[in-house]
Image (cartoon, helix red, strand yellow):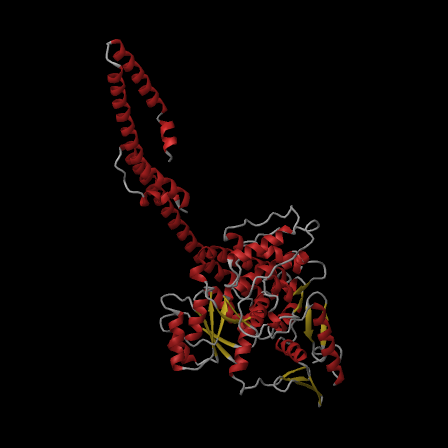
Length: 230
Length: 347
């Protein structure tokens, strides 16, 4: 599990960000005092830093620079000042990615996931398992009861997203947004086709039809058929 | 100021002079002066009057002539007093002082307004930046508390954000020189990130994207923020005026941004303004052609103001009269009016 440190001065945004990150399988911490941000970040040694540039009493750019002097940890800079100079300066000061407020949460999550993937390619995600189906993202393979099948890029992304939200309904928008952020601009119909193809691929290794369920008007969810019996 | 015009102005004085001269002549004849003496006295009087007139005319001519040419040639006539010397004659001094006083009061007012508008712009920018924090909070709250209302509220939130952005860029458009940062950008990734940023609008609208013809690795010189904003306006309008089964053709959008030959251009390029025929125009009778006048800028430094507005006029001429053209001539016409032409063609 990756840990993420949040530096954000607005209390509401900070709390909600931490909740969002925790809901999506990250360990999230945040600081509530802003006098010694670099020290606090380095002491907590997170896997990724989410840094708001507009902080009370100090310049986010300097914080970024200070942290970069001591650590190579991946930094995503968040700002409400939508201006090119800020962006250039932040990247120059050592930030790895830049996202402007207000962000769409799925898009923020995708930025985080992508930066983590890039930064920790040597630390592959452990295989995710749900209802006997296990997903090996690094090898793009799914297996069930000893049988293994390889997945296409889109199948992998969809299944991985659903696996991360085991037993919850994932909206079609969330799935589409996830695919869009990998430059796969699928429309509504293509998404249906992709999901049906994933279902067929999984059926090929003996996964039952009830595993990937459609909730009309809401989205998709993974269902464990043995859950009720246990 | 011609001499004839000057004489016409002095008609009454000249008439009086003629009357006096006639009376004088009559008196001299009655008092028994000879013809030669009378004629001589008349001549002296006429010469003296003529000399006075010519001197007076020359004095005025240099001042008023300069005033006339300055008025004709200056693009900011309220500054005229700065370029006029204070003349030697009384009326001229009055004129000069009046112009100077009027100009000064005008300058004061302009300065006051400029300061006020700068202050307002700064305030607006700050406001936009501040409003983004609660908007971000709203987005996060909706994401963390997914209920039946969340999807439609998120969509409305995305629209609010688009409008807030519009206000920011409109405020900035007055001082482009401070905001523009022309750099080499990959057109493909810029378009893709513009689409990703507006994913919610596009996906909820059921928009299909046709990325055919989008050059994968072409670099152009542009200001990425502004180009992103323009694309955002086109996207927002395409969504607002979409057909039932909408497909947005990105190649068409790029073409509308005056980038038709992109696929053939191998190196970083400045884009020429092509002539745009009526082929791409929406059927103006059937649909609102110019519904939205979203403020936005031509994103390419190379599209000069004149060519851009000239070719736009060409476009408008193909349009029915119902579609009122953007104000022509002024640079504002290049700032305004991109988005709505594009929207219909895409939708």
